[in-house]
Length: 350
Image (tube, rainbow, N blue to C red; front, side):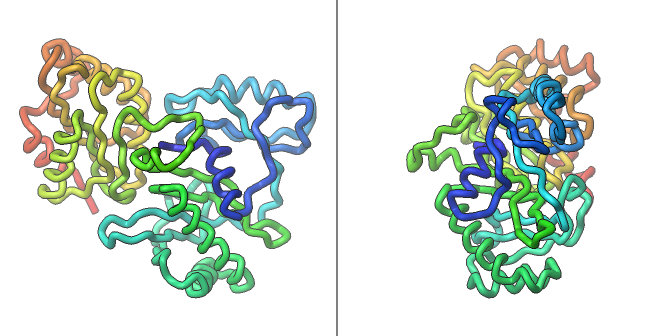
């Protein structure tokens, strides 16, 4: 389950991680100016898409809110607008925490450059989040070249790990982590994903509910995304990708009865993986009809500019209609999963 920014920041604040002063917009007349207005959609790239705007005067507020509420970003239109104080920014950093599948541990990922161009960064530095907080604080301060922030980074690392574990998160990404002009570290933006399987342990009341589709991040740096229907087929698809030498980024069981809308959301979610190079679609249609899957694939190719190559195995209910839909768009259906994986591996580059 992906939290919206205002929800994620509320969770951060509960763990004593500094966030900007702000609230969701209920009465535009009461906004303190200047303010930063942010579209609340569960996807990245809002800044580039025009989903984050600064208002300086009262007469700008309503037109700006109207503009944000009507702006579709990667298939999402907001229901909520977050208004925050305008910070005086000295430096933008990057910090995230996630489960590292290979080491079966929790990792901190850091970069001294954060912000809208973070995907262009290389040489991210990883740290063991379970290390002594004093050691982590020093390591982060050295990496960021901020020796006077050692103690603040120590507290931040410790609180971030506590927040991650307490809330059953699979990813918390603070980008940017802002160093303000008065030398305070503040979470300027936050993406947070919670484990749907842990919902029974929590009294969650977020805008998004635990997903009907079972979506789990395996390796956020993986080069291959997988989409399948049925837990068994989804697990088999991930295992087969590993055996073929690919690096699966996710497990996704779209379940029974998935439609074009839910599949389109899945595609939009998948393409946020930074190192994604191919998508494997392995569907044996039953309740979920093959033609619905085909329409979602066509829609994704039209709406997502940088959609990686798709390798599709599709069979079952309404296959003929699906084949016709995809053939018109010159999209190939492969005969089996093995051929999908073999062909996909040919386009993977390190």
